[in-house]
Length: 359
Image (tube, rainbow, N blue to C red; front, side):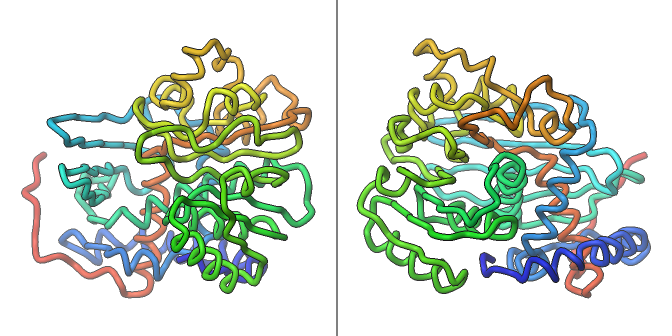
C-alpha cells in the first residue's frame, strides 16, 4: 500500500479515473441486485495515494454542515469498546457508517456499510481497515501540502513504525519531495525494519534512531503516529521549533495521550478534521486545557482552512499542527472511490445475501 507512485502521471490520471468511477456509480444500481463485498486486498489494489488525497481535498473544499457528519458514538463495556461514525455527504452517491470494536483481547476489525442515497439500499460492505489508513494519511497530506511553507525536500521525523506511520510517509511522499526520514519506535527491530523497507521503496535516506528526540529535533515535519502503552506522551514540546509542522493522529479518546502539554502550547495553530472532537475528546487537548493552555483560540477546521473562510493569516503561523481524530465523511469518500474503481475493474462481486427492504 505504501509503494511510492509516479505522482505526476498518476495525478494526470485522476480526472480520468474519477470519470470511470462516476460511470460505475451510475450503473451500479442496475448491475447488482445484492450487496457487494470489498475485501482489504481489493481496496488496496484499486486505491492509490494521489486519488485518495484528491478526494480528501475535494470534500474539505466545499461547505460541510454539522448534520452531514454528526459526532461519533462510543459504547463501552467491561474492557470492551464499540465506536460508530456516520456521514451522508452531499453530492455523493453513498452515505454510510463505519463500525469497529475492541475486544477484551485488544483485537479489532472494521466494517464500513455503504448505503445508496437514492433508494436506501445497502450497496456494499467494505473492509475498512485499509480505508482507515488511506483516509487518515491522505487527509494529513492535504493539511501538510497547505501548511508547510517550504517547497524544498523535507526532513521528516516519525514516531511510530506501524501502519499509520507507513501510510503517512507514503501519503506525504505523494505531495512533497522527501530528503530524509528519521524514525523512532521503542522496539529496535520494528524501527530498523521500517527504515529498511521505507528507504528501499521511496529511494530516500531513512534512518532508525535511538530516541524520539533524535527523530524530531531539526525536522521540517514531525509525525506522531503512535502512543505508549501506558499512555504517556511521546511527543514533547521541548523538541519543537518555529518553522516546522506537527501531525498528530494517535490520541483520539480522552484516556489516550500522544503529545504533551508543552507541545500543544508551542503550536500557534491547530488545524483539526473535527474541531469539537479534537477539543473535547482528545486526551492531549483535555490535558492541555487542564494545565491552563488556551486551546480553543488555536483551533481551526480543515474545512475553513481549505475554503479560506478563516479570519487568520495562515502564512504568518510559526508552528502549525494538524490534529486528526478521524471523520466518517473521510471514510465514505474513500470507500465510495474504492467501490467505483472496483466495479469498473470487475472486482466487486455480489454477496450471497440480501436484506429485506422496507418502504
